[in-house]
Length: 420
Image (cartoon, one colour):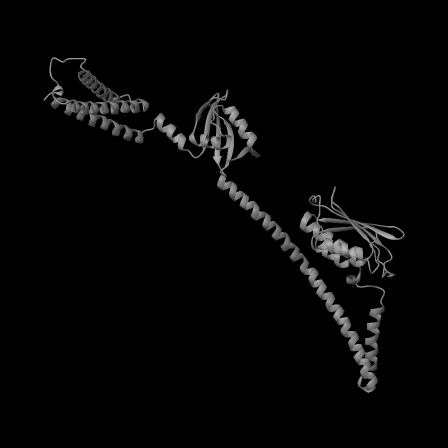
């Protein structure tokens, strides 16, 4: 049975099969040439392609009636030949895939270049991109919203959108990705490299570390303040014990005197008189204890907190004004430690005939332009107002607390005087 003796549909099926074999050979040859396999595979593929192409042309010409052969083409030759060519083309394809997986070619280099997680671009001195991998193209599309066609323009746009960190440029895309960009000069003359590294995880960890460090810094400051005030609390406890002891001694003196009046023989008169003399001497003494001196406690508190307190002038010693000034200095010391992160408080006192002018300043961080009075400052203003004074706060160029206090408050008299 010959090719021309079968039906038109059968001849069409045979022609389609030969066409498919020819296409498979052409695909194989493209892969072989792309991988630069110029030895046996190239010659075998070329021979198979020529045979398939010749068979295809003959069958097409017979189908269209453009040629009449002097002999018949038997199907016993056409069908086996088509099958052999098909399996040969399939063998070439499988062999090419295996060879590509086992050898490094320009195509495999390009594929590896594209799947790198690092964005890479190589460009000339004129800004012409020689090679750009897929990672950099994708990142450029997300950040720049266009393809990379000019290296210099791309770099300029990246620099305009990024922030500098040391020698590197930090870029962010709309999806939350963070990238580090760096340019390098290669040893190859006239060729330059742009590297874009995804540092999203490292950036997030850095931010989390900074946040934790800030929290730890605050906790350390609070802990330091707590530890430093332990001695201050101990001192106050000892002060309370002294006052309690003095109260008990006076009470014992009264009880001894009462017992002596009821039964003179049951009490040692000399011991009772000595006990009374000691208590009276202590009450009438003009020399106060260290803890009784005005502003001693707040001075000691500032020292324990690591704040250097400088006082220029004589602080008020009127009993009505001492709590007010003490509260002002205490608030300034606390704010310096907690908010300004400073270590120095300066108190300047000037006097007129009727008033004290007290200016308190501190160092450290710059204060906000507007301060909301709450807590200590709010209570301090109430105390200043109660004694008939005024309070003013200034934040520029540095935090300044100004108190105007009257010397005479409700006819109160001054207590003991100390030299500053």
